[in-house]
Image (spheres, rainbow, N blue to C red):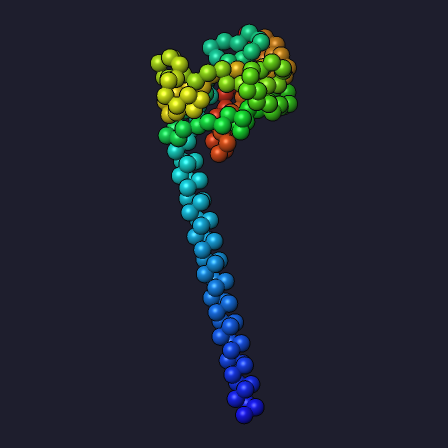
Length: 170
């Protein structure tokens, strides 16, 4: 009788252990599948996103107006999450702060406007950079450039897509 009781308890422990192990396996598999689905969505968004930074035709100091074209297939917004970085010829660099009202202080940038490919102001999805549209970014550099001196400006979207361009002062 004692051996039957010990056998039943052992069998119950084995069954409980097996069920617990299966539940943990299913939960882990579900988490992995969810992570893979999220990675696939992010990867798809990255492939469909592309921007091109175009420098101004000339720059003589003051506020720098940079054109950023949406050459991808994704709508872009949330400009406060974008990064604008300036690297100077001497190796120094500056991370410029976003200003929603305008680049009033040195080291700031703002969105001056969003325009259709033809140059007219956007009318569809205001405040969102749709594919084919261009964004005019006003930048106040944190230091002035002497004549002939260059800087490289990097613009990056929140999902990490970036474009670089060089600007040379006249």
